[in-house]
Amino acid sequence: MTRSVVTFGSFDGVHVGHAALVRAAAVRARDLGLSRVVAVCFQPHPRSVLRPEAVPSVLSTRQQRRHWLAQAGASEVAFLRPTPELLAAGPEEFMAWMQAELCPAVVVEGQSFRFGRGRAGDMRLLREAGARAGFEVMEVPPVEVTLDDHSVVVASSSICRWLLASGRVADAARVLGRPYEVAGVVERGDRRGREMGFPTANIHWHTTLPAAGVYAACAVLPDGSRWPAAVNVGERPTFAGRTYTCEAHLLGVPAEAGGAIAGLPEYGWPVRLQMIRWIRDQIRFPNLAQLLDQIRRDCLRVGGAVGTATMAHA
Image: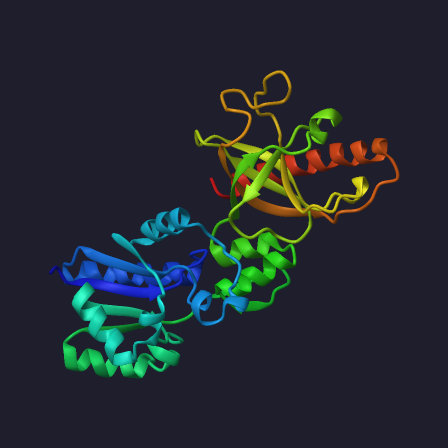
């Protein structure tokens, strides 16, 4: 079996800390003349077996994770299902499995890496096993990120979830190294936006939504085209709604009669919303005219915010 450089993790969101692990693995593989850089993802999260009531919200789909890990330098992305049998394996059993399945020349991890039943294995134990079995262990330091309020945090999936829950999508982008994406599929809504002159794509989301509010986003369509989007997340208080929704009004996109996007079916197509900036809280307007005035102002702000972000990432 071809020897490999391996890194393990959940890699949810593939933030800048994850990317640093994979880049270090790719550099080490190149130094050793190896072609296999394997990122092993636990999916679903091990808590789905150990503590189902405490499973964290999902920041990325399997397809997104595979794409971003490959961008960072992984030649292979393997998804490992955390079965009860696997999670019951002790550290020695886990390392025996790793050597048999992946033939590691190098294992690259962060200082907080744990493995085996009860998270009993740590970096010290991994180094001892490597010395016996003939594989190198490389430790990558955590990556710190400065947020908009000048606080400094260690990049992690947990801090990204916390930022999203607070509506801080711009700070989440700093942790991820790119805008956070809500991935989903367009489905039929109540068509109220069309009646108001602001047709929206109603999104059945697959990844975590940010806090309720109005956001500037960039919508990525199936053909790869990108359009500014005003995104509303929440219950639409002006209409006394109780259903939590994610709706995107795309600015400037060619539309057919009735509001459908030209060249696309009315429903059932995938979309990615790259969340750029929080615009405002949701509020209840006293009448429809005031709501429409505010939507027009929101769209102006969204166009400016997305245009600035596009220039910044060009």
